[in-house]
Length: 193
Image (tube, rainbow, N blue to C red; front, side, top):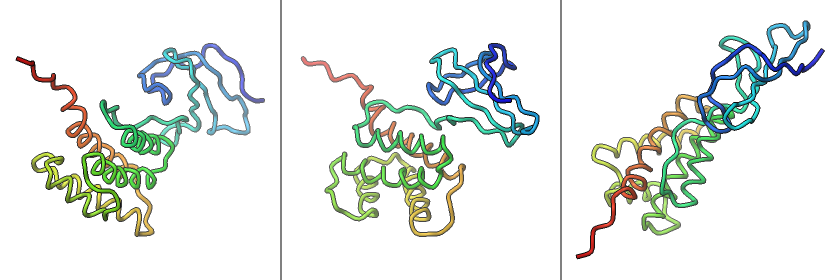
């Protein structure tokens, strides 16, 4: 047996790992093999972007490939900061949680430099620069310190980071990026008199 083209697989709702849309589909393929009972797979075709999503396993052990990108897009980011934020989000979708945490940490350095901090400083100096120059919202220094602390654990300790760790840092990063870049970009320029 093997993969069978089947236009009507069991209907399913899911978030597409390609386009991020919440979709429902009953179009795709299924794997039929008695020897693989419990490890059956299905491929659904996204009705929004036409890309395939593979679901393998069943129940709580089911895995979606590609996984869902965690977090929201942030507008008005400089290219290098946007690339790091996207990489950190993409890392979660493939289960690379320690990599995501490390990218969130690195992103703080790039944010500081994009806001005028001199290159080649220590990581702590970049965190202080952001805090001292008003790039961290009131009561937000704890967020930045948390990203720093988790990033240090991922860098200097043997323990691997969890999905919760990575998602938490993406959430913190997203808020910081919106505060520094997106929200200010929404303010219309002052009218000339």
